[in-house]
Image (tube, rainbow, N blue to C red; front, side, top):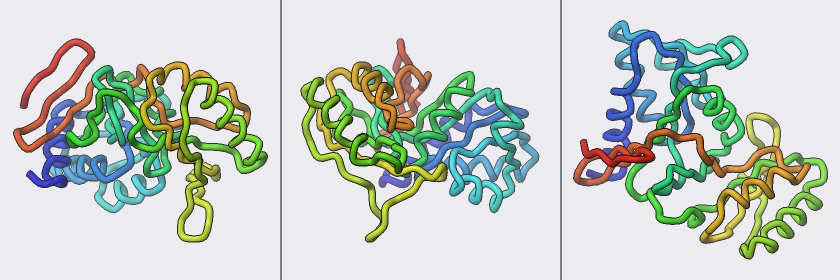
Length: 236
């Protein structure tokens, strides 16, 4: 299987967890979009869900494909969230936010009874950090916030560039109107400590470490898909 076929396989397995009538958080990114396409086919055949999108991009795609949507205010308690990830370790800790939707993704995940992560096998790592860690920040006080993040990283023994995400010559803005700093920390041996330290910085709106949020990760490779939970590994 090529990379897209692996994403489709993971999305197919995840779709098997979606029950008729569910309140569903719908993720953002290329793998999530494969899930959305498959879900839309079932909806067209009469399958019923109420979806809450994690980004404006996801909302547009769902509406184009006929998936009914509601806001999280209208539907504040969800049965299941299905989303992609930039990295996942064997303890189901994640780095997310490569697409810039990490704040809404985390809010939707927290509002859901369960979160299923879908990815190809290149995203499965022993230790988080090869992927740059997105940190969503307020535009006010950007330099001070960046310095505070650098100080936090130094205390934890982390080094690497912390760069403002750009689109061409302009800063990237999230759907919430914030900026993103991408931190190239490399290996993050204590993701829990980093998460706590970042949350203590006033200018940090949210960060891309998702800890104790995913209950299942579906990882697709050339031989098929593996379902990783806290205590088991299943082959599909």
